[in-house]
Image (cartoon, rainbow, N blue to C red):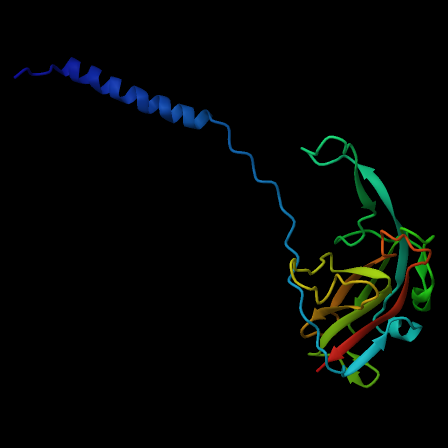
Length: 236
C-alpha cells in the first residue's frame, strides 16, 4: 500500500479547496435580486349595510347636517385623457384612455378645488353627455348630534347620485368582483350605501370621495350629474 508523503497530502488538500473557494467568490459577486415592486393594498371587502330603520340620520345636503361633521364639500370635473396603451396590445390600439384626476386616492390634495355649500350637492353639474364629477369632503364623527350619542353606533354613508356613483372611503373603494356590490359601485339611479365603521367613536375621521357619472355612458344623455341624497345613518 502506497503511503502519501506530507507534500502530496498538502497538494491534494489545496486542489479540493479551490472549487469551494471559487463557488464562494461567485456567490459573493452575484448581483442581488431586485426588490419586488410595492403593490397597492387590496381594497377592504364591502359590507352589506343594515336594512332596518336607522336610529338616527343626518342630511349632509343641509348646512347643519354637514356642519355636524365639520364637512367642507369641494368639487371638480374629471376629464378623459390619453395615455400610453398597455404593453402587448393588438394592432390598431395605439392609445389608452384614463380619467384625470384620480381624486379617490389617499393623500390626494383637493385644497385648490372650489368649495361648495352642502345644499349645492343638488346643483346640476357638468356639460351633459359623457360627464364625470368628483365630490370630496372630510367627516369627523362628533360625540353627539342633537340628543343622539354616536359612540358605538354603526355608521353608514348613503350617496344617491344621478345617474351613477363610485364611492371611495379613506383612499379605498371596497368592492368584490363577481357579486352584486352592496356598497361602493351600483347601477343606474341606485343609492350607494357604504358602511363607514361597525362602531364609531367621537373624533373618528373619514375622507369621502364620490365619483359621479352621467349615464348610461353609451347613450351619452343630455342631462347632468347631481345628488339626490347624501346622508349619514347611525344604527344601534
